[in-house]
Each structure stands twice: as structure tokens, then as C-alpha cells.
Length: 133
Image 1 (cartoon, rainbow, N blue to C red):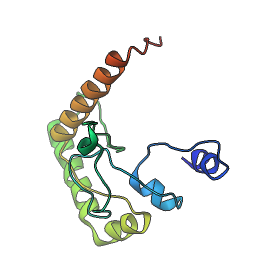
Image 2: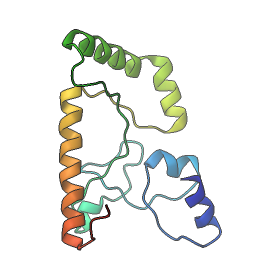
Image 3: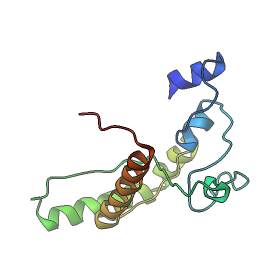
């Protein structure tokens, strides 16, 4: 993201997509969002879906464990993550970085990843981009 921001400032790049907080941190001007709903931090930004591009992209992170991890351990980790995201200190750090934070249980996050993978895969197939092995 930092390299792209430099390229934008020097006129080498005129457009790119990244997380909203990256644009804010690098003092770039966001012009539209790949979301299904407006962003509370920037309700004035238009949604790409309203302009004929019904694509949602998000840049997110998650915590993963091996599939064989005991359910009790998974539940404990999920509680710890939920509590950490809800903690006032964490929210303060996220707000300072302009990060939109949320906790999502593992099953919900897995479904989100599955849907995004299908959507991006469809875009790649429909565009005719050849497979890169």
C-alpha cells in the first residue's frame, strides 16, 4: 500500500483499491466502496454496486487453527478474540488507525471467505484471465 501511495503521488498510478483505513492513513482520497452498505466512517462515499458493479471486496484478517483443534480450544480462542475486539483499549487503537473492526465467529468467517472466494473466482473466469500455475 505504501508503494502504491508513492506511485499515486508521483503520477505513476491514478487509481487503486485498498482498505478504507489505508487510504485514510496514507492521506489518499477514497472515491467509492466495494461494500453492500455505506461505511459509518464515510457515509458520503458511493457504493460501486449502485453504479453497476455489484462486487464486494474486503480486506480482513482472521485467526486460523488446524481443523483437528478440539472444539473447547476453538471456543476459548473465539471468546478471547471477541473480548479483545470489544475491549476499550483495542477499540481506541482501531479508531486511531481508522480500522473498521468487528468480531465474527469462526463458522461465520469461514462462510464469508467461501462467498468471497466464489465471487472472485467468477470474476476471474468471466474475464478470461488464464490460470497461473
